[in-house]
Each structure stands twice: as structure tokens, then as C-alpha cells.
Image 1 (tube, rainbow, N blue to C red):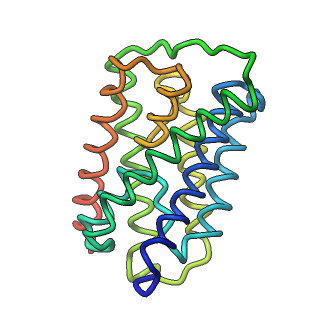
Image 2 (cartoon, one colour):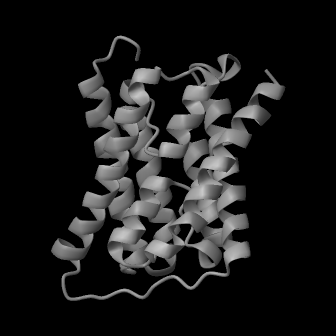
Image 3 (cartoon, rainbow, N blue to C red):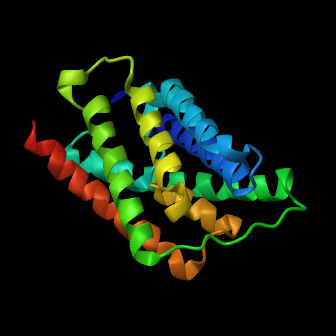
Length: 211
């Protein structure tokens, strides 16, 4: 991956993040998949990880990018471009879902208890980043064939477990997509963003304890 051009990495991050956010906005926000939305989201995440993981690392998530950089497995020059690309892809996916797929459908804002939502986003973002660091960056698991499934199943478990509490974002790019979709208020963004980035930082420290 180190010999891959930055443009190729950014294209991979854009495609993966776009389709992850598009699935979330379409299947969950607009309800096209009903109660099966978490499975659609996890399936999309898994196949995109397997499709482009060898190109960019398949972060699709600013909190993951920051954590992987701190862990030492991401070039510092890639961090800002990765995050910008992920946020752009998430916002565009929300726009496409709203304007091209559901132009006649309005959505309701997520009703969250602040403490519960912060706890939910922190816990499952921690779990997500911790799993990613262990299955996709650790020397002991290098070359494994299960990393995509492991990561996707964390998201599936989180969506099924706390999706009703916080919306089940675990990803600042997804949080941005939810805002563009109209289900998150501007004043509520911090309820997702703060615990997501904090959880990523804590996950790095937990990962380092066992290395």
C-alpha cells in the first residue's frame, strides 16, 4: 500500500465511504431496508473493505484514520486528504440518497438522550477502532482473510444494539451524512463527533498495551 499513489488511495476512500454512507442514508434513514438496514450496512462495509483495503487501508472513517495514524500505520501526509475525502463522500452520498432516490420523502430528526447517545457512540466507536487496529494493522494478524468480516460485524452489532439510542454512526463521515440528510441537528453534532474521536484515541492506547 505504501507504493500506491495518494490519488489512488483517495479514490478508494471516496468510493468505499460513499457507498457505506449511501447505504446508511437509503436503507436506514429513508427506511428502504426496514429492520434489515443494519445487515445492508454491514454487507456494504465488508465488501468495500475487501474491494479497496489493499489500496487505501479502507478506513472510510475519520476517527479510524486518526487512530491508525497515531498507531503509526498511516502516513501523516495522508491524514488530512483522507479525512476531507471521507467527509465529502459522506455528504455527497446523503445528497444522492435524498435527491435522486427519495426526492419526495422527508425524514424525522433523531431524538437522543445526550448521555445515552454519547455513551453509545463512544463504546461502539471504541470497539470498531480497536478491532480495526488488531485485525488490519497488527503484525500478529498480518495477511489474514477475515479482517473485512470482523470490522463489518462490529458495525452490525453496534447498529443492532444501540442504533435506536444514538443512530449508530460510529463514524464522523456518517455523522456528516446524517446531518446532510436532516436527521441530525447542527447543535447535536458534538454528541456524535466528540465521543467518536475520543474513542478512537482511547482505542489506540488500549491496542498499544498488548503490543
